[in-house]
Image 1 (tube, rainbow, N blue to C red):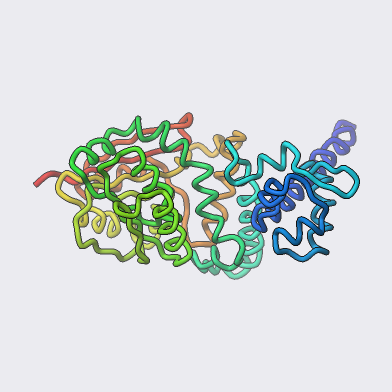
Image 2: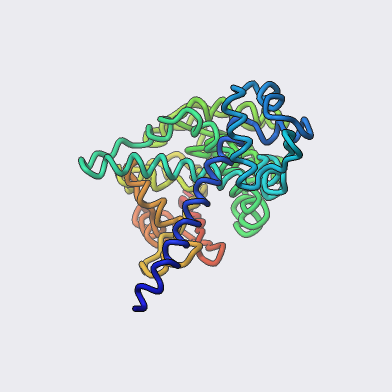
Amino acid sequence: MSAEIRQPDLKQQFRAMAQGAQSLAIAYVGVVNALFPTLRRLGSADSDGLAAAAGMDAGYVRRWCDAAFAFDFLEADGETFRLSRSGAAMLPDAPESLMPLAVQAALNMHMAERATALMRTGERPGEKVMAERETLLPWFGPMLESSFASFFEQTICPGVPVFAEVNARDGLVVDLGCGNGWYLRALARRFTSTRGLGVDGFDENIAQATRLAEAEGLGERLSFISGDAHDFSLNEPADIIAMNRALHHVWEAGGGAFIRRLRDNLRPGGAAVIWEPDWPADRNALRAPARRGLAFQNFSEHVQGNHLLGADEIAAAFAAEGMTPEVFRFAEGQEAIIVARRHAD
């Protein structure tokens, strides 16, 4: 009897979840095709006017407006639309923008679809899956920046002394897997003597990072090059080699060998600074709402040939290669920074 009573509630719960996914899908279309910022610029418009201003097909935009209205992203007065509070929150430059949620939802569905087919064969095609959908890759860097840049600047930078140390000696920070360069731009804004080099395997990311650094007046101190994080060599030894939620991308190919490469490209006394979500030792921790996304990420990382790592596991691996690690934990232990120093000669 109790199961029969609960079943309608369970169905209602899942219907609500499905509508949430649909809502984020409509938001994703509005973000990527600049419908939200175009409507902000116009103030209000009918669907044909919005389509013309955004350079989009009028038929698609007409139906998108109806859906965006249904999910409360738009308000309507007859055939004229304007942004609602929820729609304004999806603007990429809005304070505490909700844009990352829409982009992440689209990325999640892409990875879930790929994993569904690949599970049958065991194939793990690697990071190229990130570029399989032309609308996703250009938004991956902005998604990470909007999600993490403020946290990095306000919480991590003050809490990890090595950044200020490097700035005091006009040091070089290398960011492997730099994406759109948000991490180095954040450092350069805060530490005005720090120099930075970003390395990434996607040309789209390098172009985006270079353009954004120039726009912020940071082009003289920051540069970005195309390269493979698995196999890199620096012309100038680095004071810091940073990897932001990216070490797990190279781990299964040989963690020890990669750590030795990091160490050998650091100045004596320099540090590898690794930012990773801290994979919990106790599976029960994954049931916490804040960690459920981590469980999904670990599943989708398998498609790319990766798995998430625990901070203590990372620290032990650096210690085994003769470096001195220190672990800093943030966000109630969900985020970890491992600072592993090369011994001074």
